[in-house]
Length: 125
Image (cartoon, rainbow, N blue to C red; front, side, top):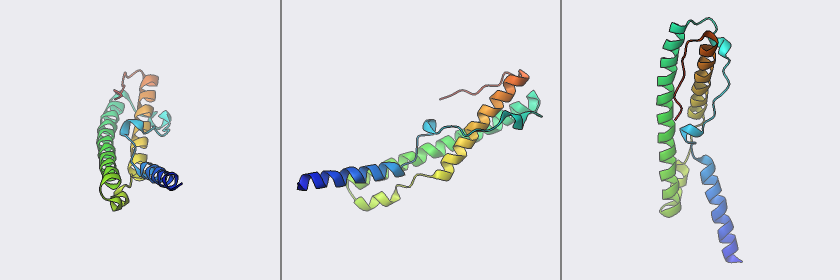
């Protein structure tokens, strides 16, 4: 009976720790952004906006993955060495939301590019 209780407590602790971890950048889904936002842009403006959004998305992806790594280290430390380290597992909802918005903008730019036949597309990881 005691082992069952310990196992249940361990399972619950692991699930709580995993819930707080940041997502991998490639697992963050794009938020919807309407391509009509870019309807007044010409191909030159779309290209400049694509470069700006792409650079911002790359930076946001790096920050997201960095947070994921920090959370994984804190989780491992909490499980193996020092349980108070679990308080450092935080994730970052604002960071994740920003990355999702940027991914949505990339999709919207591609949609506008298709409508205007500009040939802009983003490489996916």
